Amino acid sequence: MKKPQALIISLGFGLLTFSLCLPSAFAETSFSVSKNYTLARTASTTGDLYAFGGNVTVAGNVFGDLVAGGLNAFLGGNIISKNAFIIADSVHALSDVGETMRIFARQVVISNTVGKDSALAAWNAVLLPRSEVQGDLLAAALSIEVSGKVNGETHIVGGHVFLNGEMVGPVNVLANSLTVGPQAVLRGPLTYSASQIATIDGGAKIESQNFTLIDTRTRAEQFLPTIWGTLIIIKFVIFLLSALVAHGILRNISQRFVVVGITEAPRNLIRGFVLAVAVPIAIFVGTLTFVAIPFSLFAAVVYGIGAALALVYTPIIIGSLAWKGVYRSLPITVNWKTILVGVCLATLLDYIPYLGTLVWYGFVFISFGAISKVLLDKFIEVR
Image 1 (spheres, helix red, strand yellow):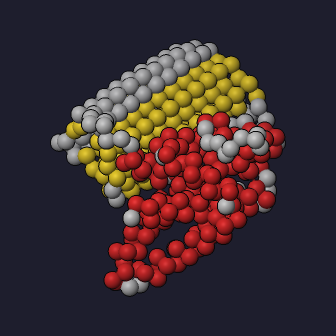
Image 2 (cartoon, rainbow, N blue to C red; image 1 turned 180 degrees about the vertical axis):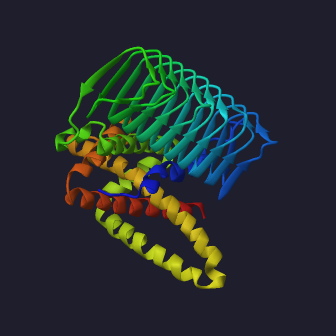
Image 3 (cartoon, rainbow, N blue to C red; image 1 turned 120 degrees about the vertical axis):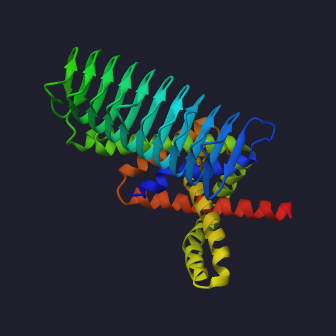
């Protein structure tokens, strides 16, 4: 099933905007949800920072954890003292990170120092020469270039992998192709599996290497990290992470989303389809009238958040429905087990031509319809 890459990568953005629902007891934590967020270079936070917007710019220092989501994220301050977790379409990381860094994005460019481990999942990732990972590097990408330094172990799954930096620990690569550049210094053993022997520049320094040939041409091998396999891995990780975070943050209402989605599936299917088609048309018509433009923009934002939530909750609903089918005597349940089952089933739909796509979008409409109904009912209750 084909889904827009930018939309898949931005799943976390829609759900994480609801972090305002977290308890206000965390006095040292800063939350911001806006069209564009900026932490100026002269500013800093004394605790954790949660920032979400179309463009997120963190030019100041964060003395705590940073959690950010949006279309574009730029980290340009001197330091993020603890952990950094970013979900975006495009990420540029210049700020040094005191502990761990986790990034899920389409495009990643890194030029910083990470105090502990770093994990990346992206379509394209580049670690510039200035970058340094004090701990281990774990990466999955269609194309990745590592020109910086990794002091711990390096584990990479990808389509094309280009190593041109210094790796102190063991290097393990599973990819379509591997190229080792002239500036590469691999002090630990290189173990790689690919469809062909690596291209190694004469200037590269490698302690030892072990090559295993894999056949990436057959369909059965698609589960290996070929180009398609890498997409599946990235999609699975993002779906699972988004679903777990959504359920964790929206725990009080998450169960209600799923119960309404399953028990009123036919109505939600129709409701979700109508909303998915009619709302964009109404927004477009509204923009033609000057007076209605602000309302249209507001509707577009709400629609976008609802659509992102629908995508996140689709595998959650699938998993709870499958769990209910096996354990009929139990009530509809939402927990990490049902979420994992749902994400696995949603991922496997990619391997069912035509019918898989139809089933996926059917559940998306059901999820969209259920979320809109629950939120509308909640709004009426509040009033």
